[in-house]
Image (cartoon, rainbow, N blue to C red):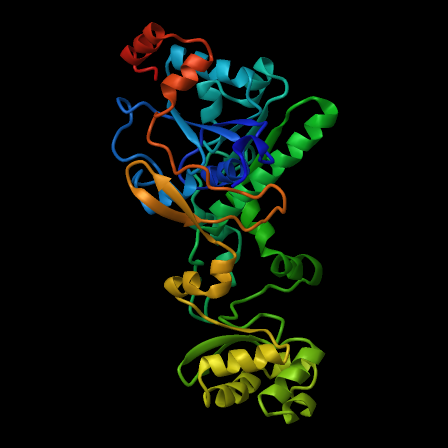
Length: 396
């Protein structure tokens, strides 16, 4: 395991004001690579009902908040806000995903923070952006999936809009914000100045449309639903076998020829109805039916082995338990062990990026609420009597 002080982001201190998913996803990227993250939460006395983000000991919270410390702080009290501002003096990054107006009401907006520490970087994630006509609307992943166009291109043709099975707008907004923060940290090495980094669920969702968005912007095409078929690369899709389903991606001239030979149907490569990409696009349904008539004759593993040996991309369609049982997934260590002081040994989802000298490590499980409050306060000059007085006022 890489020593904490040797990790790539170990020299940076991050104040985490985030909740739910998009913001915590951003901060998780920084925490996993060694940043000193202080998760700031409301004191138990003022937290009403179940906290946003689900049960603390639930799988979702535990996966989102590993590698952090936790302190409780009531920013609505003068004392709590004063503590936060003192923390900002020596921090590098603050991350928040409040609705855009909230940070100004609390007094933790960029201009206020910048006056305290000109090197501070504020990362903000919202539903629709920090300004504009939808600025005040509450953000939610599925709303962004719909407004960002994703639901119009997901699902079977004619079956109506379909959301994807993960909160992709939340997750990508968080990842994009983390990338922006890293860029701002690099730029600060030249300018010596911090800046305000902004992302939103809507922007992230549209950016993730990638070639589907470019089809409209550059070619004037409005993409529709294509189900399990790739919208432009044919044949690519799901095919039935004698014992289930597999994915096959046989697009491109050379791969398509190898594919036809491998499945024992070389004539499909020369048939004028299927020999070119435009012909295959025009006759997609007929070609898929011919392919599936062949794949139905053998079990999934037969075709996966045969096609991969022929240099044709093919793979199984796993349920979640099968994903983590796969030998390649286990080799990649995508299930990372952590030890929680209450829950005991747990596993969380690993990072998708590897560094050869300073890899990501799961240094700690998600912290218990406020477990580090006293230590953090003592680190900035508060003694036991002062801390007791703050608790009396529900400031921490």
